[in-house]
Image: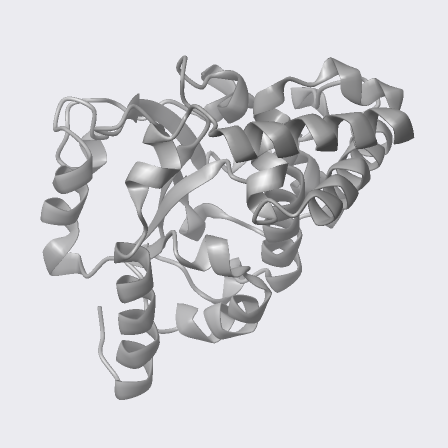
Length: 262
């Protein structure tokens, strides 16, 4: 990874923030405390009054939205009701079919296999394989992928970790509109699903796009992002992921499996 003072300062800031994530809070606190349970009950009553379809969602989803807004019932309820409305219009059939996203799947850029040491699924995305297509199709690909990831969570887990590999990334792969759309979907429609994001093999040219996207990343998400230096890649990943669960492209034992085959 090339160095420059500007780049190093931005990346150093993100490494520090990423390393400050309290993963004990993320996953070990699977059971709610009394205050949280009470707020979940109040929020459920509010959203069910506004939209009866919310009766179909489980308490874990209610809790994720509540936690995403720091247990503020009003803010969490508003976010959740917007999500329900979005879901009905964007995914009217309940799921995105592969026939709706053929160009995105053809890029062969997203994979899922293995678990980290806390039992969270591992998702690998190759940014250098991304090509700008129609924004609507890309958004559907994001939803398709997040739905698949969410459906394959092990029992007792709600979050996944992701390795975003930017080797070979260049301006032809830059897609600010797509990045912002994906970020919005992740933060507003799948809150508290991302556990940690490793950015690896980051080229200097990527920092231009990063600086444009960074202001739109909420504080909770920022704390989950870790820029990994090339020389520390193996040790960083192995500190969180056992070799038996690490993708083989990073020296582990598991082969990459395309998201559509998961």
